[in-house]
Picture 1 (cartoon, rainbow over the protein chains, first blue to last red):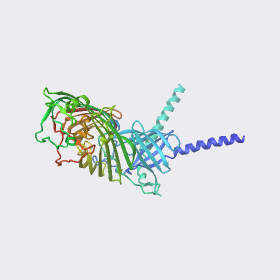
Picture 2: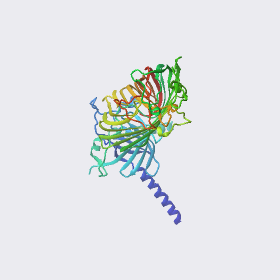
Picture 3: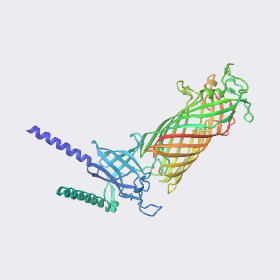
Picture 4: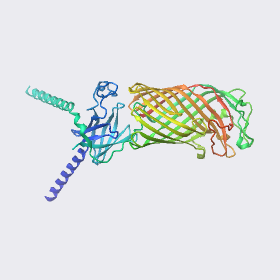
Length: 148
Length: 381
């Protein structure tokens, strides 16, 4: 009986431990260039990130809020960049790694395969790549919190 | 019927739920994110990005076929000033022409790689092996060569036209590029290159002591997302023989991203026009060159090398085929900068520069034909 109790407790601990690790990525993050803030949320079992702040929110050419004008899908070219999901479909794989997702670069309208690695609770390594992980670039994102 | 109503009600509720979530997202008050700051107090060091907005896609792997249209050539007699110690006896102004003919075809396969070894915000190291095969289909004139070619030991050798026709020229290159951003604006670029060039076959490499080394160092400033410039120096073989030249980088993109420049002078300089999201046009020039060892003429421990340098004013069209696969088509003029030859003392090269008065061992001239190049590339847009 005691053994069963410990076994169940161990499994539950393991489950909650896993769940907690997966959710660590949720929050607001700043990419390496510091020109945007990205909020990562969990929706169902996957993780998504959208732009919630831009250092320069107004397009200097049009004078209007920036839109996703480089999107290859014409119907999306008028979508505001603020609120745009640039991280999609990430699944937690354990050990602080989220995979199977994509990152979108509004600069050129291209989506790249992506892997996210949590270096510590306030730092993410985001590697976008084409084809295989070798052909990519890693950016470091830092966690943001609301000013106290 | 009752069952259908239940399904309908569920669908309506589900639809309303999605709409509600969407509305919630759309109505989010983004101003609250103005107040977010770094959780960690550690100062953040930001780095200049290794590229600017709107540049042509970076090529990771490329395969292309290069071909020059037919042209006439004139080669002087071959002299061996180092081996025979009799000085240079080629009149550079009026060289004695010994070989004439027509190159009906010049070109071949080119393989290029540029693999990111380390690629992160604070440091980028890219490395690539490149291979360029140049085959010739030469028809010598009836009276060519005018006199047979004898090596210093008295044995007869093939004419240069025949060597090019039978062997062709090959270049294997290893390039390493290092990008060091110092801060958000300033950066340094270092590039090293090793080239093995000659009429060797792939089953019979020439001595590695004939590898030629090139290098460049650039200091640059990334002014904004649309403009960066840099200045530096390079040791290069792009004009055929060893040279030390200043380098100027000037990459710029207009705000609407339609126009731009991609300049790394003197190696290349282009004006860029973006046709649409998936295709662009480059107009400008490339400077290509290397020092090619001719094994048959390399006697007495010396190295006999053709200083091949060519300027290629051209138009290049790049377009996306699918995903990260892009095609490129180039057409332009192959302008002969140099095809002269030196006999080097041992394998050691020397610096002639643009103003040096050392005489050449051979003085050779080409007509300047059109060329084209078609390729397929694996790129990062």
